[in-house]
Length: 265
Image (tube, rainbow, N blue to C red; front, side):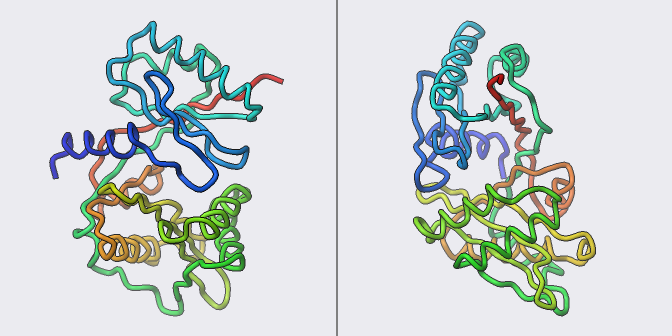
């Protein structure tokens, strides 16, 4: 896999020509930027900036986006900054404008075919995978997420229910069940017309970590992606999951840092 070529393909297909993450949101071209705009429970933010963006243009674009999202009344929005974006000091300019950086993630990609038959990817004894197809499944998924990460899953619950209602064919969600309890969950976004499928989630409750659930969920989703004709799996990986995914065969294309703007008051 030629890293530079795949990064260029990713930038064109997934950022410059991004599709809405889900029903009820829109992707708009705003001068040198591409942004997603939705409701307060949707992800709102900048997904791409022109590689030729200079310092003066960056400052103007930042001011324009603050004005745009503030006028919509959103409590926050995000500028998704990649390590190869320009100008080189764009992160400094975002901070100066009031954006707060959150922990960076590693952009990882792997060929689907390399992940469909991972060694040791079987489910642990006593664990079954339940496809999430209804509200009850979404509730189990949210519960697994909250137990794994210790954070509120309200936004996840909203996103899963919306996807199931309006665009179920481009979305795969799973809950791993043990003794009737959700112990892990994961989802996959399919992006029709591109070579990419995106992996999200993969959180496992503490007592079930280290037993191969993460690997099993990756392999299962890779098999589904292969059946649907996708070439690559993509992940925005945390520091916790990046080493695991690298061992499974993923390659880093760079990093991405969420810069979040929250209006004062």
